[in-house]
Length: 327
Image (tube, rainbow, N blue to C red; front, side, top):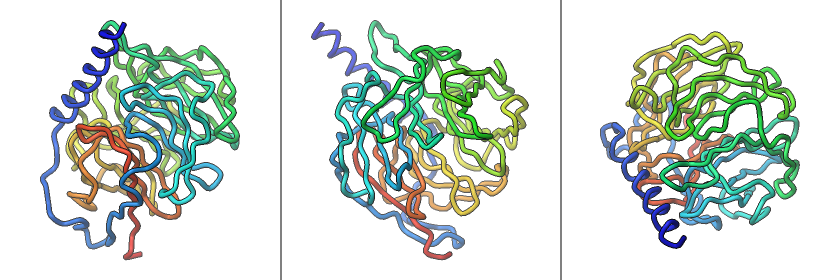
């Protein structure tokens, strides 16, 4: 059993290093912010948050706080943390009712935090993804909406709230990639919008809601991707671009800020890009102050873009924010 656990940790570390090294990366620059339309700097809120170094966690903004949920720090986690300033972090629970997990998704819906699917363990060279759905109104007490949603078990999917529903998009189960799309109005009953969207099956992509549409950006499908897709109903998907200006990547984050979509990091990148239409992408910075990283989380809080933890080849627990000082 001890040897199995050691092998688990070594495999996860190897996958992290391989992902980091195989992705394409943007050119380095010594400039922090190079686009004249967005003047600002990345500021380190803390180099070492109270929660352990990790990646494959999730983050949301709820009750005027930033939340960090689960992830992997050498062990699969089910702890929950919050902060009102990104500097001081408080543990809501060290062991939530949901199983330990990473590569899950989280959203805020119906005035609750929701956590959806993800991997709970790794053994015999295979992950053990779930299809459970949980919610909490305080981050401490968690209630299981369903132990087995209608969608198949998965990890590295994306989730958004759109049209008063929670959506689950794509993902992977032991490297069988998915491009199905599901939604629920209560977190219990799930409906398949499409079993095969037009974008290729993929994982490690990002999704946002922008311009009254859902968006799917990049990920790993037919290799590392930098395509961008959108849909106003989850059924019919339109390709905005097959080759965005940013390099191919997975494990990046995306947010909506200043009426634009933003793509941050991923693979071995520390660049930041934005777009007002999903077609034309502009580089805000080619070399942010934080280290190149993947599988971090990003949110918008206090009118700033935040980057939380992730991996640059080693696990991180630093927290950074950026604000536009040219607005």
